[in-house]
Length: 93
Image (cartoon, rainbow, N blue to C red):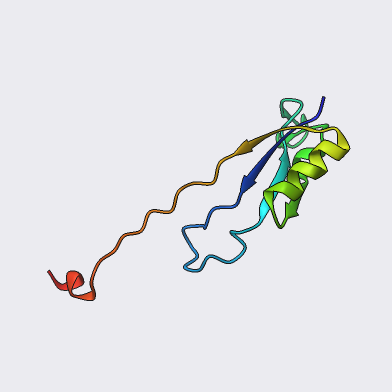
């Protein structure tokens, strides 16, 4: 059976804004272990679903899609935002 996880994208360390962090992503779990290609040595897999990421505007839309398509899923809760409140003068202490 197809396994998937639904999560909300966190803000990357390289971005200052919160663009596209309100979207929910459905990502398929890897069904088979990766194997090394004998010629190049690169890691490969027969399962191409792990390359697929579906974006949804809400958690409910992602869950509805998974239920409609018969995909077993689990929801990964969004990480909590940690605000570091400081004054500009703190830079000169």
